[in-house]
Image (cartoon, rainbow, N blue to C red; front, side):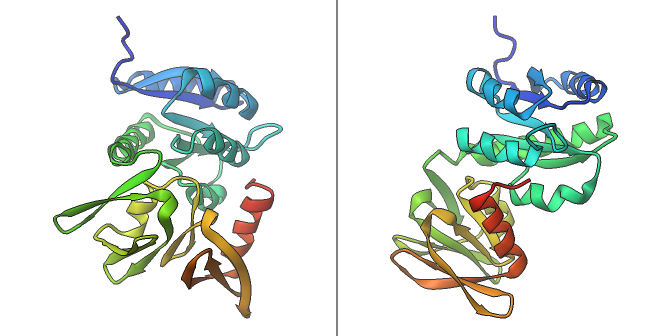
Length: 244
């Protein structure tokens, strides 16, 4: 009988053996998590992803050869819906990590209490993923539920306490906030501003319009959105080099 049925499969990517062993021992104490494998490099995690098919990766940022941030991008290329919990000896990478839609960010030394809180976040993330397939997302507005193809969304805009999806079928109102929606989107989406999430695959061009301000236009859609210099530079880094 397979004792892993119903559990959340996880792999650990950590080059520090004592930290890896401690993390594994903590995780095995929680019945909802199954540790499927442990490796010390990003390259090994990519190989492991195909045959173990984990739902979550505990990923150290300071890895040799390929950084954890760059590894995360490669993992998402293979599986856009993999959950990533970053691990680091410093909080300085947290902004980049959450820009990559991290489920959580753990700072060493890691305690069992930290892991308990992270597992709660993983469970909430899993619950949200249930109503998202690889090609569409369910959104709720009051008592109405709509299903929208991710490829039909140009961008999502915050308007007061609502989110507006600008999609091929028009403007769709959603009662969910941007941060919550972001957790259920794939790696094609980028939060370019506190009020906007854009579909990178729909971008037509990005042009400067003022000092440190850029406008984003989309294929076959008349509206534009703006972003600041910092987000512009980070988006360029992702597009041309990958983060890290």
